[in-house]
Length: 213
Image (cartoon, rainbow, N blue to C red):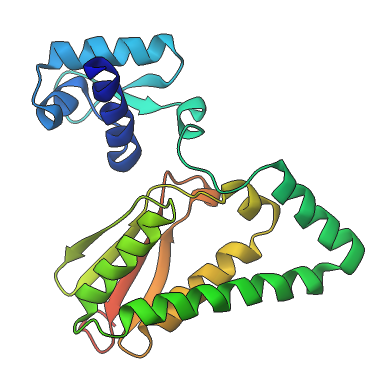
């Protein structure tokens, strides 16, 4: 049982942190790098992780570990084949505008729910933290980083990825919801995008009137 817990922790760390060395994982898990490597080899046997070698500067090459597509599929997903079939059917029977209308209705409902949770938050950071909690509960594995006055709102997993691939209006409406949530206090721009090949979606949230604008 303990071994499974450690394997799950490694998968979670590689999902949220990206590629790591065995030494990096050992430090995060408070175990030796050799111990971490042993767990990684078990995951490799299950085709859950892969390796690549990178060279930084003049030092020795570093072996890093990353999740495979099989491992990514183990994380929460809120879609199934029925959802994809419904998207296709709506397009074919009612046309693209009808599907766009349904997506818009969904985004408005989500925005209303989020606004209710954020409205009593006194600062921009507390609003972002509240959104992190909501989106994490929805399966997005969200977090945020503060860099000076700027915040990076991160979603390490997309639980509707297949639906979004079938119709990118889901992603467009999602970005619009985030922009609306923080207007006029801050601007929101997506700077990393899973559907463009990034490992996560990242949004830059910058207070209005900051020196960088």
